[in-house]
Image (cartoon, rainbow, N blue to C red; front, side, top):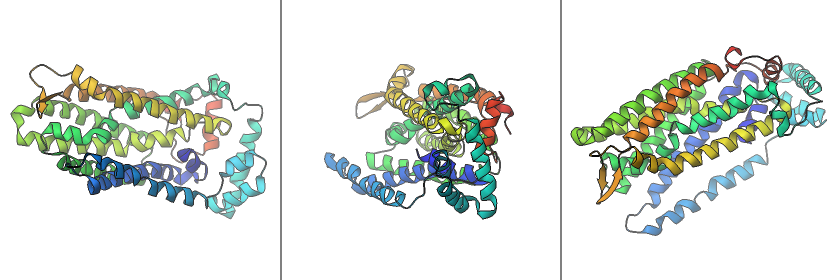
Amino acid sequence: AVPLYIAEISPANKRGSLVSMFQLMITIGVLASYLSDLMFADEGDMSCWRPMFYIGVVPALILLIGMAFMPESPRWLISRGRDEEGKSVLARIEGNEAMEDSYKTIKNELIKSEKDKSGIKELMKPWLRNAVIIGVGIMFFQQFVGINTVIYYSPKIFLMAGFDGAVSAIWAAVGVGVVNLLFTIVSVYFVDRLGRRKLYFTGLTGIFISLLLLGICFTHFSYLGEMGKWLSIILVFVYVAFYAISIGPLGWLIISEVFPQKVRGLGSSLGSLSVWVFNTVVTFTFFKIVKAFTVEGTEIYLDGENLGNPAGAFWFYAIVALAAIIWGYFYVPETKGVTLEKIEEYWRKGGKPRHLR
């Protein structure tokens, strides 16, 4: 619900930056979780994971209290006949001068879509096919370039790279959190300046190259020695940086933009459902892929346990990144500065995603 809500209470010229703030807050949360883990980490006490979970109550309470002071979406209010309330919120968002124009645009689109239903069957209509492909497809690639294997398992990956001890590996993971945060800020700054497609292709190209090099690094880890350990962490940081400026925030941003008013909640929910299904698959299969693609003689051992070698897994994710570049050429729309109502009108006319401007 969050990217959808932000998109509907944002002016068109700032929507990209504001929706990308959603991903920025995620990266802050990831970094905060790494740092709180460090506070409680104790290699002599296996129950130290419990307070790591308890601390999550704090941000949950902040969100619960904070949302009590936020307005309803003006588009939702107007669609429910609560026009005066909707106008009041629009005036806060757009200013009094632009409020009337925004209200008329929203009202006209609602009149056009009065005959449309808001169920799953509406999403399956031919004029919305591209929006559905975009919503599910971008979330597929967001996850299958392997980012959450690094976010979730970075301490284990850094142990495989040669870091000594779980606490030192968590410190390296903190570095991942810092890079993720800093480059998401870069994305927030540029998304409404450079546009969605430029950031998408820049980021995916960087992801592809860094994953290829990461695979090479792990393939030759026994020859690289100490240098290999630092090369691997640098390449992981580069990979995370390119992800954070591109498909990380863009996935959530684009699914909040491409669906029309009547089915925007349902479409965004479909995108969110997709991301967690794909996340589950990637998370569950990572170590299986590592074992399956390990070349004999390159195995990494830790405390006598054969961990395999993640090189093949990184190359697998690199192939997915290459596929994402090709797919993105046809299906990633440029929605910079385009109102949600104009995007809906474009789909109704049968427009192709790559020609949307």
